[in-house]
Structures are given as C-alpha cells and as structure tokens.
Image (cartoon, rainbow, N blue to C red):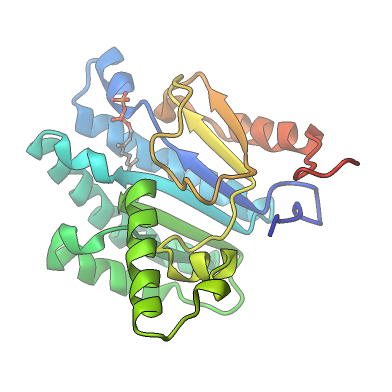
Length: 241
Ligand code: FPP
C-alpha cells in the first residue's frame, strides 16, 4: 500500500497541507480575519506553482474543516466568497498549468452556488495528462469520512454486493471521499503540533512537518526546505532495511 517517493527527485508524491495561522497573522498585523484568509489564498498560488515545477503528483489542502462551521457566520461567508473568487480568478491559469482540481468533503452543506462553481472548476481543469492534482478539502473531517465509509461499506455488505472478507485497503479508498490514497508528507503551519482531523486514514505513514510560521508567512523557500528535508528521511514502512 505504501507509496514510493517521486522517482525523479526523491520528493514526496502526495503532499497534504494544514494551512493554519491565517487568523493569528491577521490579528498580528491589525487586519480583519478575512484579510488573513485572502492572503492565505495568495500563498496557495505560489505553492501550487512550485509543486508543478517539482513534479509533485498531488497537493491536498485543508481549506475548511467540518469543525469550521462553528466559526462566526461572517468568517464562514468570507471563506465561501474566497473559494468562489479563487475559482473565478485561478481556473484559466490552472488550466494552462495542467493542474487538475478536485474538491471533497461534505460539499452539499455549502449550497448550490458553490457546488455549481466547483463542478465548473472540476470540469474545466479535467485532463488526462495533469501536471498536478490539486485537491481541496471543504467541509471535511477525517473521522466523518471514516464514519461515511463504514456506512457505505456496511450497506454493500448488507445487500450482499460485497463480502466482508473482501474488505481491504483498496475498498476503503474506493469508498472514501478523499481523492488520494496515501499521503507521503503532511505539512502544518501555525506552530501547533496536531493533525486536527485531517486525512486520518491516509497519513498512516506520512512524514509530518510542523512549521512555526503562520500560513500567510509561508514562502516557496519554506516549502522547498520541507521537500529537501523529506529527501533525507529514511522511510521503512515497518520493514528492516
Ligand atoms: C486556518 O487558519 C485556515 C482556514 C480555516 C481557512 C483556510 C482557507 C483558505 C486559505 C482558503 C483556501 C481556498 C482555496 C480555494 C484553496 P485559522 O483561521 O484557523 O488561523 P488561526 O489558527 O490563526 O486562527
């Protein structure tokens, strides 16, 4: 099940990022929280470009967690608006760079306008020779995803379309909403050392790097340092080598 590193340069194939610290960055700089998220989207653009340049297979971003619904309505609305604006502004460039966009999570909770935008963005950027798979988690929680998988798989077993003995990692990935099977490198900015319900099943063997900077201060050089640090790590996947 374990992925091998990117053969061309020993960089990770699949990267996940918890982009934390937008609120604290805004507070530190006397901006509104929405400005922090806006700056956060600008940072994403550079990291996507660098990922294409470094031939990363996939980048999976935690844009909005299941728990983020507990935030003030104004902040939630500002993030929704940012997603729509990001799609409007970025899709032509993403298309040019052959970046394939995919959104996942409980997207139904975001209303028709965003869902239509998402379908448009996914259709526009759909390509068979993508340079990067850019996956954006919206209304996503790792525990919720596992619960959803258990429910779907149970239904298949109950209706005798699936044998219990045939349930394996492949089946779990098939029924998961997460578009990537396995994360090689998980980066979290913002200084906290936790995984906050992100890609719980997929990070089983991930290297985890905690960066002590707010997401709006995260640079392409910081990203390159993470990639270079990943190269130095010996990944054994339980084996003795
Ligand atoms: C965490 O910072 C960040 C978020 C909850 C939202 C991040 C969302 C974006 C950058 C928009 C992404 C959109 C696309 C289309 C990629 P925080 O507010 O939790 O920071 P804090 O811990 O300092 O409060």
